[in-house]
Length: 347
Image 1 (cartoon, rainbow, N blue to C red):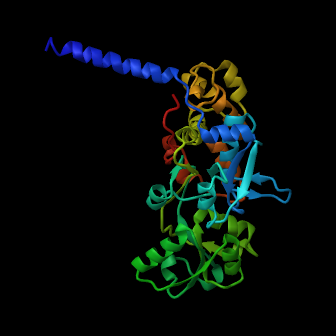
Image 2 (image 1 turned 90 degrees about the vertical axis):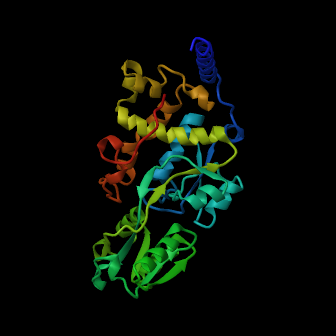
Image 3 (image 1 turned 180 degrees about the vertical axis):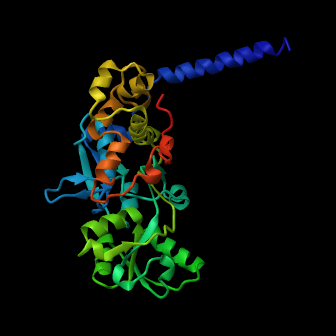
């Protein structure tokens, strides 16, 4: 045993040296971060308009949960949440636009699944909404369950997971249906509201927005209780730029962590001055300099949180009970409150 102990001590010392070196060396900027800084804006691919996630108002001002994700990154990287160029993309355009470098990040309520993760040359970053596919029907057809849609015509959009999910689910239930597929999201829901189909299917969060904003009369429509899929929604970046991937991953994680440790837009400046809580201090840039590991400065997460709030504030503002969508927090609550939102430690 005496002959082994020096080897173990040496190995431990070497490991500590490696950790110390890693902590002292800042991240390389990476080509995407360099391009963003040179351009002065983050190019963010978003939907053509899905309430609660990304949609422009009549003056062209964008808002939504995905929009706030991009604004937080712009605040962290460029110091200004307004330095974002929003690029509206339909389902068919979104992946080719990211592949071609037309956008730096795709934050377009896109489902993280194996096929996309393994075959498109992208990295999904951090899940910002746990969703599931559902059905919207007019109350006049007197259907209260998706299992009652035998022989129904169902409108949906091509180039999405919705098209395959609806086919798979009804096939598994041995229920014959007919799908009518449209190239654009707008065309698909307008056809439904015009009476072309007996049901419309997409993510349940989008169904809530459509019923409240697009239906001739919201009270005439019902969202059926079944969710037929898991739809974890997350932004994407191109593979091959680990530094940008780290930024796009850790900014939203910082927003989740901020909610957990009690940092809000209202108290952030007071806490930056007075907080003695180590977890708060790390996020506010008053203790460890974690920014250098991302190629950023100490205040990267402070600026992101100050710009858009913590994750709970973002949820409440865009999709929560006080928003147009009026969605419950549900599985999108923090893990400590019974939900699935869990950020790796920011330390």
